[in-house]
Amino acid sequence: MRTSSNPAFRKLPTGSAAHGPYGAPPVGFNQSQGGHPGYGTPQAPPGEANRPMTVDDVVVKTGLSLGVALVTGVLAAIWAQGQAEAGASGPIIGAIIGGAIVGLILALVIIFRSKPSAPLTLAYSAAEGVALGAVSGVATMLYPGVALQALAGTAGVFIAMLVVYKTGAVKVTPKLTKWIIGAMGGVVALMLINLLLSFVIPGGLGIRSGGPISIIFSLVVIGIAAFSLLLDFDMTDKMIRAGMPQKWAWYAAFGLMTTLVWLYLEILRLLTYFQSD
Image 1 (cartoon, rainbow, N blue to C red):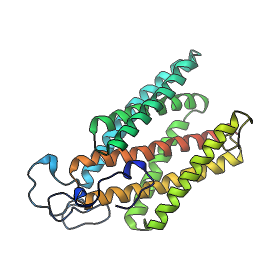
Image 2 (tube, rainbow, N blue to C red):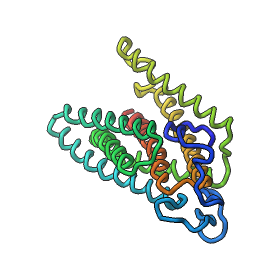
Image 3 (cartoon, rainbow, N blue to C red):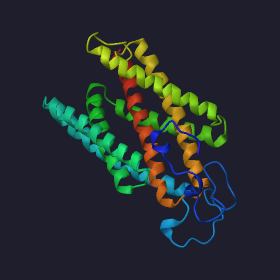
Image 4 (spheres, helix red, strand yellow):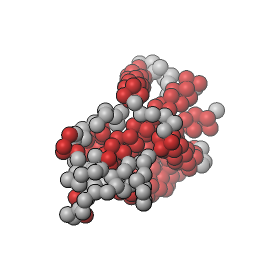
């Protein structure tokens, strides 16, 4: 499988291990083979647990993961607003940092295990939901409606990039993959440099200060995250075509979740820049 910008998809099994025992692989995101899209003509599976994954499996698992993140996010946002109204910023900061750290640890465990896990994927979604919900709750108090706008923007970008992928308007090539990985490495390096400089220079490089440079930087990051979705779709499509067991749909859902979390947070940040002017 081709390398992805998403760390979750870089440690997938390759070769014969990636192919199920069913012969012809099922159809992926952007093809059909008669009947219902997402299904091929595998041999009779010995059991539900080992049948090849399909598009429906990925949709269901990703939907469950998003649902968990949404529920914990809404609850965290309501709680954070109550804490903010009471002037208690400490618990909010603790929830944001704690949720982010737990999410990072779970993400690393999933990535380095290189195995699908429904409990870990859902736990990751819950932890990220808490962190993003707390951030969204505070942002909504300062800028009413901004969290819903960010959520709608994230959904819009996701749907748009899925259409772009399905129609083949942008082909996922090795050159595009290398460009996205390089661009992602560049923005991460800038973020780290900005963080370090902010300890000695107010505002650091100015890429997170809310000015024009910050807006441009956020737009660039959103663009990279959007194109990263193309790579996620492509890798998921290859997993389906390889006939990997249906349990690997949880791994695909985790990979998509990591990009969506990043995309939502950056869109939320960009919207606060506009509303603070």
